[in-house]
Amino acid sequence: MNSRPRRHAAAPPLVLLTLVALATTLAVRPAAACPFCNAVSQTLRQEMEAMDAVVIATALDSDLTRNRETGQVRMKVGRVLKGDEFVSVDDEVEAIYYGEVAAGRRFMLSGVDPPMMQWSCLPLNERSEKYVVKVAELPEDDPVERIRFFMDYLQSDDDMLSRDAYDEFATTPYEAVQKLGPEMDHDGLVEWIQDPETSTDRRRLYFTMLGVCGDRGDVPMLEGLLTSSQKGARSGLDALIACYLTLAGEEGLPKIDELFLKNNKASYADTYAAIMAIRFHGTEGGVIPRSALVESLHHVLDREDLADLVIPDLARWNDWSQIERLTKLFVEADEDNNWVRVPVVNYLRACPLPEAEKALEECKRVDPESVRRANTFFSLPKPGPEKAPSSSAIPADDDPVAAVKPAEKTPSLGAGNHGVYGSGPLALRSARDRSGPLAVAGPLTGSSVSAPLNPMRLVYVVGLALATAMIAQYLLLTGGRQTA
Image (cartoon, rainbow, N blue to C red; front, side):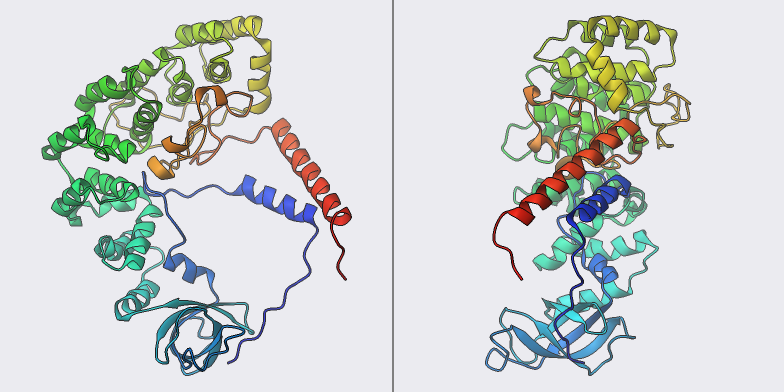
């Protein structure tokens, strides 16, 4: 079977493309994934699922006999992993590959667009070929069985396999990771965490896993990392804090309060990491009651430049004890921290208590524009059921009055966590940049339960997209040289 150049359909109008992209953006909701982790790229398994055919093939050409102009290499199919209706063993195909080629070299070929299949190439060695074959056989509907296989490759000396295994964990539901706890290599995880050569994203994963399989005997080691002054000891701090609280329980909260939440000298990124760890425990941790978690978040309200980060959490967890405090924040806010006003209004809008209505009237008197922005741009969603300790004094999320949900990656912390204003602590904007109606209000990305779209906001977004597309199309049609 010989491949031929792919035929391209006529490109749809730019406006249509823009609308399709906009609709996709509005419709897509991220799936639950391992907390603290962020996949670097698409995994081999995901790539196989997206392809029409996947085969193991052997190069028939060498660098001397290949087509040097097109990069095409003749290959013979040795094993069909997917798509046997399109390709068979012993078929000859042509694939474009510009790396070194020797006759007999093995590749994984991924094909799309039958019957004139277009093939992409991944060179294999003996070990990676066995890995690819096994990946193709893994059950699609059993994430625990899948990561049981990938766990053995997390520290592989083959970079491709190690990276793919990490990405699989990063895209696996946290509940599946928890079920694998008894099978994890506890001592190995501790060793990898303490290894200064371990990358930050790996540390986040290993902290997640240690929180699943560790015990209180690991708490002193984690405390040592939290208080260490050595460079790199606290990398992946959000996952480190979450792991510490998982194993130390509610007794560990005072330490986190002291180091990060009450401490005015704590850096913005460190405090943000602690907030995200608290947020994780309020949604997925299942160890510490929410009544204790919100007490820790109350400390952040004393830090005017950070208070807006935790207000959505208090509302979402139905903590209505801070009406007077938040109203005072609203009234006393100035141009240096007026971004706090819209989150305060959203908190008061969500609150079912009569005191909240009186507070809203006070807010309207002080700054009617902030109240108008909150009502225009932000709806009040009803959060779905979440995992929380049964001992929590905070009511469950089946309360008919809900609040704006804080941003998280269902939940995901660290490099992959999309916080209220950006992607993780290293990408946080400065306090002065968190202004304007769209920047002050909480979740912009990564919520596991998203707010219903405000109709006014939808009209605004669609109108802006259409205007941008029309301008771009006009520039394309009037500027530059026309082609036949």
